[in-house]
Amino acid sequence: MNAWGCLILGVSWVTILTLCVFCFCKVMKTPRGNIHAPLDIDTGDLDTEAGKK
Amino acid sequence: MAQRENWGTKIGIILAVAGSAAGLGNFLRFPSQVCQHGGGAFMIPYFVSFLLLGLPLCWIEWTMGRHGGTFSHGSLPGIFDAVVKRPWAKYLGVLGLFVPLVIFFYYTYIEAWCLGYSVFSLFGHYSQISDPKEMGAFLGAFQGLKQNQYFQSVGIAYACFIVTFVANLVVIYKGLVQGIELLCKIAMPMLLVGGVVLMARIFMLGPQDAKHAELTINNALGFMWNPDFGALKHPNVWLAAAGQIFFTLSVGLGAIMTYASYLRAKDDVTLSSTTAAVTNELFEVIIGGSIVIPAAFMFLGPAGAMATAKNGMFDLGFITMPVILNRIPFGDIFGFYWFFLLFLAAITSSISLLQPLISFLEDEFGWNRHKAAMALGVVCFVISHACIFGLGKGVLDEMDFWGGTLVITVCAFVEVLVFIVYMGINRGWRELHVGADLTLPGWIKYVFYVTPFYLGAIILCWGVTDWVPWILGPFGWKVTTTVNGAWPFVHYAAKAVPPQPAILWTRLGLVLLVGALLALIHLAWARKKHSTGATA
Image (tube, rainbow over all chains, first blue to last red; front, side, top):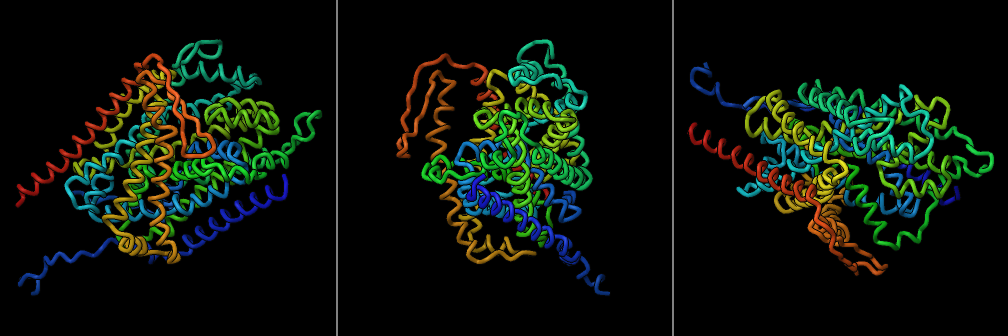
């Protein structure tokens, strides 16, 4: 393998591995709070006179 | 309507999407493309295409998918309907049902070959074969194309197909979390470990022949990676790189959109989509690029490796690799590793092909998953037989052309246009960043303006050089094209050949399939309109 081959292989591998490590670290570090709950939908069901009581 | 499912974990959807993308092409297609198109120089257009085409398409699919999910739509007809808000848009979504369905018809059968070969390896069924021609005879008999001392009928391949088909159906039947997510959480780490083990084995090989001491791993990597920068002047190298990126990331299938539709409205898509795409690159560039071609170089020499690269994916995977692995100590074990690796890569892709249709039946017809899986299973099982028994008559290649080459590219182009025209780049950019755990640099927004032109140019080139000859072929015209340096001057040469009935029947079948899918879309919306009217 010549110098250019080494360089291209190295740059390709390092780029991909760095991005992989960066992305997976970020995914793992995401606090559980960032896993969002379904939207709270206010249906207005309790906005009746009976509901207010 | 029943509440839609959601992914159990973030890593679950990332591995599912990465599993959908990492398939046979990562291990077989990529290394042969690198060899044929300038070695290491190929990586320059490859990474340019990844940035300008691959990543934007992934972001668009994830964003539109999650957006569609908030309207309880997980398949392209519903997603287009939600984004475009015009009556015709849902019919355009037929592309996103047709493509995965057609690919599934034949992909499961190829997946079954991987399963069959992994068992053959383990029990040493072909361990005495050392000649590629003989291995070709073994493969041909296994596929039922000929009869010889190895196989008398297609029976074993058919049995493998049944097992593979049932395995796919069981995963889909079990649902998103207990089926797809669980499988991908197990299969993807196994794929990584299996790939690294094979890579390590190849890297530890010394010269195989004392007369050819130059056939070392260093020279094997040089054969693949030493760049020929002159190749960058040829448009077909750029086209091949764009094609590799396009096909490797599973965009245009509708599968990513469907998977993303099961996200919650404020779940992240930027980090998840980027992670899935980069994981696919890990399997392609690092693992896929370090197994087949380096091994072929060390055992067959540079001429043999180049011939192998030009012979295509299946010869590479099912003829060359078993012959090579037979020559190393514990070849049976490594043969098993190789084919089981391909099987894992294939099954994580094939299950994603069924999901858009399952989602369509669940979301638009209100069916439950079990009913949808069984109905779809019956249809796929019946039509897959055309690929099994029509192999060698051009049926499988024809389905691959329409489903896996032409319509998939057009579908991706339509998705990009819908995103840009109807969602708008500014709104799409904001939508992409809702709940984002990774903020993309602002300049990337402008890449979305480039993507449709890039993809449009690819479609134009492929249309002229490949698609027109292919489409005209079965009508009695063999059209060959030659690109004489100064692209885009393509010369057509046609001569009359006998029409091929099996291919014409396949095309008729595919047209009927499109008609049936359009009728289903129409029926689904008519039912909804009717039930809304009845409620009102």
